[in-house]
Image 1 (cartoon, rainbow, N blue to C red):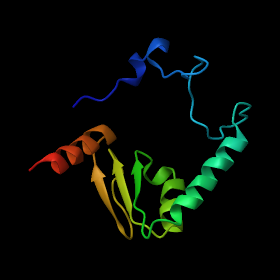
Image 2 (tube, one colour; image 1 turned 45 degrees about the vertical axis):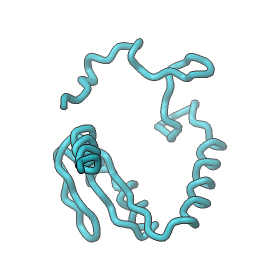
Image 3 (tube, rainbow, N blue to C red; image 1 turned 30 degrees about the horizontal axis):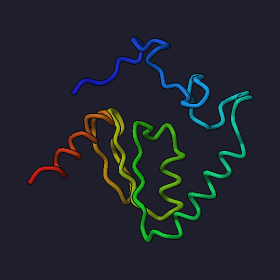
Length: 118
């Protein structure tokens, strides 16, 4: 399966807001970010806290972050759940978890195919 060539993306292929048509963006705080919506993030965290009360042992799946971005790993540790790391270069996992080497699309597609197999 081929990945997306990020350099070939044009403005017309980027996701847009279905309500206003502006370029869609994730709601996380970037440096000097005047567009981040704090109330939305607070509401998302509250929904997560409520959901976490309903599960016994969540599994955290990290896509492409590796050891350079510790926030996903730290979240997995905070909820006492295993970490599944899917990463092309850094797939090793210390402690409880599983590392899978490859692109997120390729690995997730292979998992999907394996689950669909009789």
